[in-house]
Amino acid sequence: MIAPGSRIGALWTVYKHRATIFGFGTYQGDEIPPAGVFSQFGPADLLRVPIAKLVMDDGTVVWGCECHWTTEWGVKEEIAGRKVFKARIEVLRRIAARNWERAGANLDQAEAQLP
Image (cartoon, rainbow, N blue to C red; front, side, top):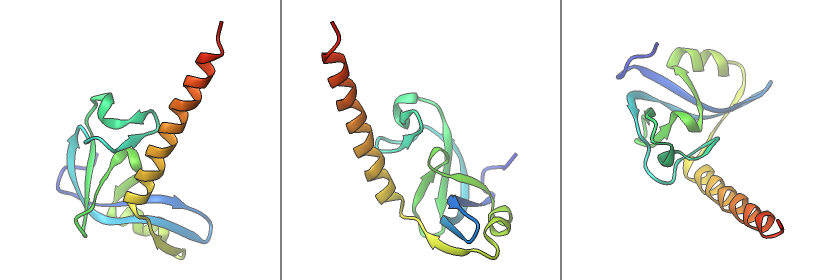
C-alpha cells in the first residue's frame, strides 16, 4: 500500500518502445474529485467515491482514475529504455468530456426510437 506523502509516478500509456507519462509527484491521499474529472464510468464527482489524488511536481493534479500510478521507482523501472512523452491532462479531460457528451446524445437518440 502506498501511504499519503509518498513519491509516485503517473502513466498514461506504455508500449514496447515508448511511454506517455503525466510525471512524478506525491500521493496526497484519497478525495472525491471535482467536476471535470472522468473515470471509466463517467464523471468521477458523481460517483461520490474517494479516489487517489496525485500532485505532480509541476503542481498539476491527476486523479487515480485518470491514469496508472505506482511508486516513483516502479514507474521509472517501467519506462526504462523507452522514449518518454509528457501527457497533458487538460487535453485528455477535454476529450473525455466531449466523449461523455456524445455518448449522452447517442443514448437520447436511441431512446427516442423506442416504442
